[in-house]
Length: 185
Image (cartoon, rainbow, N blue to C red; front, side):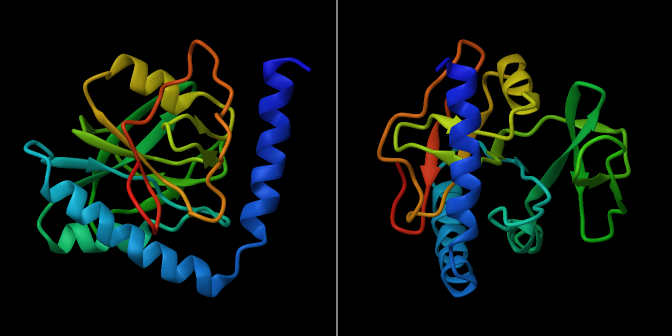
């Protein structure tokens, strides 16, 4: 089996594993992850703009974290995708969110680009070394390759973090930190 097929198989298994997590567990874990992330931010010297994502399906829900960071007067941004290009735009609670024309997620209705200092990268699964498996479109890997100085953080439920190294291809970008409800790797 080639690496592409292996990654596709891991994606399917990760979706199944995530779907088995109880709502109570997810809610409790998310609260602990938010708290660890806010502590992580407070220990960084430069983190004026935080890039997040607009959660969908059974993804770890960072929408409450958007509100928390906004109330702390932090600059928050979300991705926007046009064609194969992804960029970030500012977000506030008043930002109009629209469905992306080609991908199944919501994005801010703005074209004013900003550059986050730190990005929380969505993922299906990751390992403790920071190797992640995303959704297979490559938007984040391309963006992070072009913006290599940005701090890359992933959130993962502790019950599903991989004990094995996630297979990587040359274009895959490793995370700087992985935060679970139990610890920061």
